[in-house]
Length: 349
Image (tube, rainbow, N blue to C red; front, side):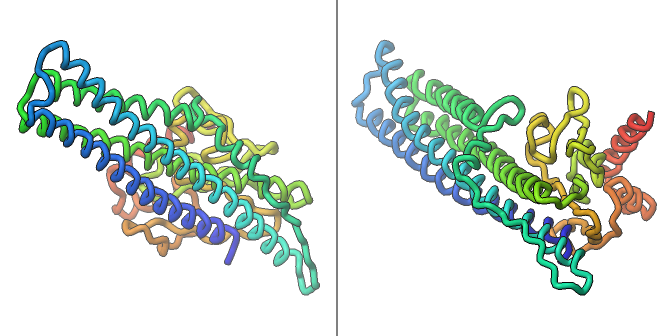
């Protein structure tokens, strides 16, 4: 297995961890929604039995009480959600660090062997858990994970509060109340989708940080090479990343990615320096190719997620142009190809 295939395999395993994390999040969201619905059902039962006054001066009190009970459940949900994502980040960081490091070590040994019994050991150190957790708090788009999580919680609270107020303040019948409170399910569904996006971004960021530290340790012991931006060959890749595909970093290891406000300086995908627009849901990888190690042929993702389609070691733009020539290019890819061509022309000028 060559180094690029190794990187792709480890990245696909990272995506599997994202999927497992999503399943855990789904379980806890379903549990939280069930608790909220139980609270609402108990409240409606009190209305049916006439245990809650319909006087105007009591309406606000009952809304506040219901809201407080639901918010307790929401806070517990977001605490668990944060732990799930943070644990996944640490796990992915650690696995990425060792997988990438050992792939580099193996390929360097194979290249340098030349019939001799050569052992180039990188002597990877044990990762410091405290250091790994600290990297979790590096900002993305100007906000650290806790800030984004707190903002998401406030948004969900605000939506649910609005639903409850509409349902309860106007003295609606139980049937009308039940109809209005269906909006709680929708609010939870929107929050869950956002949680999946955050989880995907954070876990793959953990992959990038672990990879970066493995590369830095390799460089420290004398394994020199090129950093290469590796995008996914499909129509979902954003134009700025399609443009970056197969580009090498500068001598200091930095890439310059087109962003909303100009070029963004970064060490690699999902690393500091990138805006949220260039980070969220990014599926790119950074490949470290030690000098003398030959890259493998690239694969393209098929609609079912398989990687069996093989290409020469060409970039996204060349891949899209081939589709254009053969008449198989889709509208989304054709539009992105125009953007990538424009960015390439701007770079030359």
